Each structure stands twice: as C-alpha cells, then as structure tokens.
Length: 179
Image 1: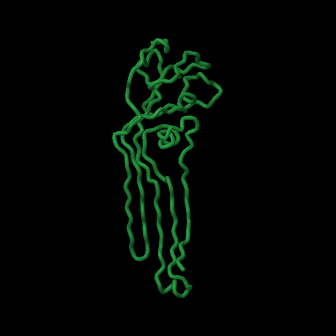
Image 2: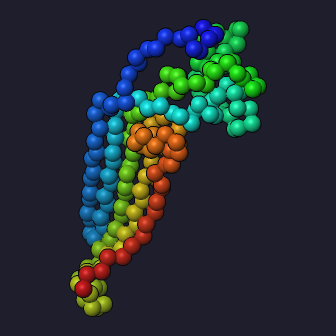
Image 3: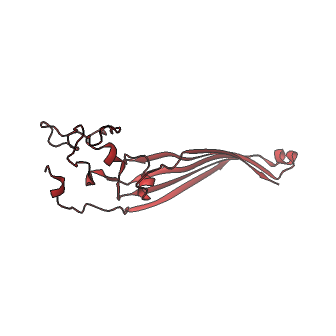
C-alpha cells in the first residue's frame, strides 16, 4: 500500500505487561556483605517515539538517521519483504507517521542495585571509639537486558514520550559509623 492515510486501523496489543516484579539476594561472609536487586517486566508493548524522528525513511534528512538493527532491511524492488520502507532523501510519503512499526516489546530485566560492603570487627572499632564501622560501594542501573531499541525501556514505559531520559547509572561509596 502506498497511501498511509487509506490504511485500516488495526488493534495489535496493549502496554500492559503479562507480569512484572523484582527479586533480591544478599550474602554475608567474614564481615563482607553483597546484595543484588533486580526488577523485571514481561510482555506488553511500548511505542518508541524516537524512531519516528531517527528512523524516518529520509523525511528529516538533516537529522541523524538511525542505523538499521540486525535483521532489519529497507524496501527495494528486489527486497519486497523488507521491514522498513525505502530510504528517500526528503521523503514526503508519510511513511514515518504513527505506526505499529514503532511498537516494541516492553520486556526487560534490570539489575537495579548491587552493593558490596565490609563491616569492621569490634576490636578495630573499639580502638577508634565507635560502636560500628562499615564501608561500601554501590552501583545503580548497571545492567539491563531488553530488545527495546531506545535509550531506556523504563523511561518509555513510564510514559515519558517526549524526552525518554534514561535512568542514570550511578556509583556510590560510603562509610557507616555507629556511635
């Protein structure tokens, strides 16, 4: 079909995941502690608004254009089963209008936090005049597994359609003192 406006409306899914949740684990050994927290979501669809602009089939020739993902291809007379329309400089065919082609699987698994710490024994802390002393290093949002091609699946799921600022990766070091 070459006329976007004459296409029929199709219901193809929704944004509600099949299930979501989280899990965590913590270990201690000889003063060391390690804890890891994960969150996940399975199913549902999310609209990748950034692809309207950067996967625009040449409609915005002076913006950066998205490179096609592995397995994606452009239409040519020899490749009629392509995943994307033909790339045309200054394309005016409206092929980048709101479309199901920008819907992506919203499933993900993310390591929300990992924390490694050490608690000094009472012999050391008593010499320092404190009841307890611990040090730690912590990291947030260090790893995510998803098929979503945008910057952050959780930002997209939360409805931040205009900016999709990703959740920051963050490292923290600290000291815990008990007097």
